[in-house]
Length: 467
View 1 (cartoon, rainbow, N blue to C red):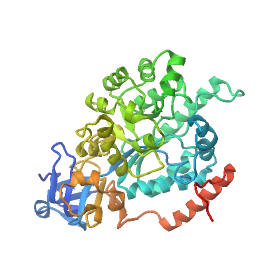
View 2: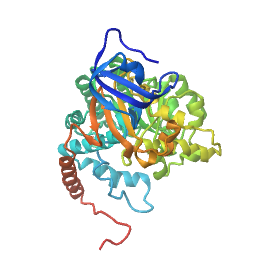
View 3: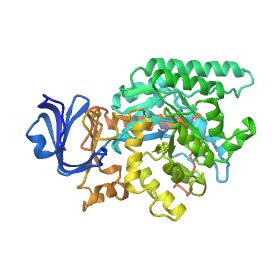
View 4: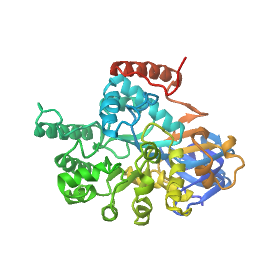
């Protein structure tokens, strides 16, 4: 079981005596195991006795009460807009989605000033880290990218981010050509500034919100940028039946068919939601290697109809790389994983669908592939990045401990995450950030949240009388 780089006997950190869910090719779960980290990488993993005989560590972490997993990936999360306004009801009862979006959701996003977005991004990052998420893909709604990147760098999280771009003009005073040129220029600038190294913790991707705001020219430019710079693309697609209806009405083809004809699909492209798709579109996704991101909680509360219309079991059988996202409001990827495990069992009356082992792959190995880091994160193996999570089995949700993989999905949650490493750096220790003063951040978040709501002129509605 033990493997190491020759000649290394002194390491920075060792976690000793833990139960390790490796997610390696054999899916080994190691009891009384140890992990050795040097710099940003894992240099050894195996039985404790074997590693004790070879390595000395500057820092030793007692792992006897830990289940250790690779860091999780949240493949779709709005780190601005939602985190500071999650308690504000969006819209009125019975209001349709488009009206809610235009009159409530987007105004809340646009009311964020640069400092607000930085604080929001840090709040979102810490919530993810506290839940075992070490990597995420932003959903494409960042307005002040420089401030957000600066804020994320202080938290230590790994991320793929991008600016909010709209290449389709909704203002009659702005020509379509000008809107397209502006969107492409934004994508080029952000990738040139923040997209140089795939090993960097923060990398800019062309993030295209969805079909309604970015026409074909922007998709084509984004794909060229992604291919030329070894980055990815992510976009919303088909959460509601209105998406394929729009494409059929404007292109004569379904969304995935149209994007395939453009030549903008592929292994560096991830599409989120993907509920209203046909079997032929599933086939195209499989043939092109395009990634799919499902957000179970968002599907439920948004009334997408995913249980009745979603073809995710068919996607899995076709070999499509399925990742999971929290979508921002409920940032706990372990809860999203639990929902995924049960979602289609009930919908298809088939308890064999999406077992715990498969869902755990979605938030580790599948997430690594979608991030463009298939051999760098997602597993605890020699040579991979030291993105590691320690789950505290002294917490009641873990007791008694038997099948740790099943318990990760069925009973555990983010509240049990004791420690987190990203690139070998311990960013969460004993349930607290080692890099951010959380008390100061809470105070900043409260102040920003009040200012944001005040700027919109919206009133905070309560379902029951508040006296």
